[in-house]
Image (cartoon, rainbow, N blue to C red; front, side, top):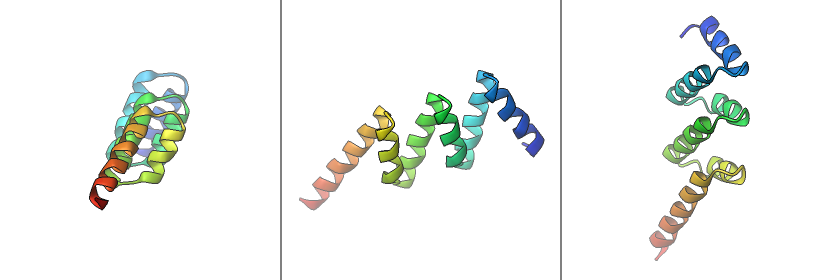
Length: 92
């Protein structure tokens, strides 16, 4: 995707075009663009939040998972609980 196309897509998303938001989430997820995903999540995209949770889990980024959990992501809370259980089991 070219820069002008991306700029157009962002403008469409900002104007409420759901398809544009979905495309941006997909592109940002493919690129691992946490900044773009955060912007989309803050604008209300639950798909962006889901993608952030997935990326954080893949990267083992517990700080990002905590940030997402604090922001209300139930999936992030669940993943953190799983990680805590795994850490506890590894210590035993």
